Image (cartoon, rainbow, N blue to C red; front, side, top):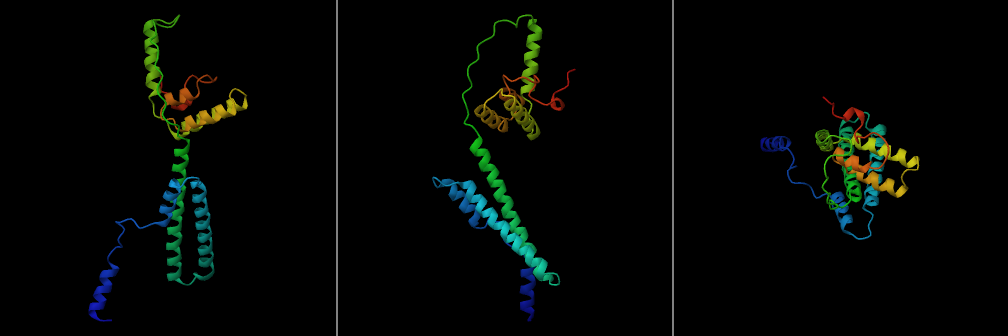
Length: 209
């Protein structure tokens, strides 16, 4: 090899590939196209490609086990392909989750007007009623976690099993619970059902001073 060739090779080896511009990924293009084609089940499109990629990974894994024990170069090439396929599968899983949440997210509903309350509740001093309303409003603004949503969903399933709500109500309330963002959202999801006054599980409720 000439000196110029050796220098050019060294420069090529030391130059990172161009990852700045995103590649023309057919997988992404197909999923985006499926969203725009009427009558197309985009979830099935995702699953078809996911199953195909899983089969490819299994084939490469078998080849690696059978033929790459003493061939480091082949083992490295197969590992690169396995990592690439795994990244595409993880992207498909993420896309499917986004599509699922987009499908169950209900459209925003107008907030009904509230009637002004005249005075405090019967038997409750006005000062205490105001404090209770302020405390409830503060708790309703608490941001919730996935664990809180799962806790509310489990309570809804218990109420359905006890016959307190119908299947249609269960589906509607679970959808609302999955899209809840605050404790107030969960409290409205569980409205009218027996149980703790707070929509949050005990370990998430603020301590009273």
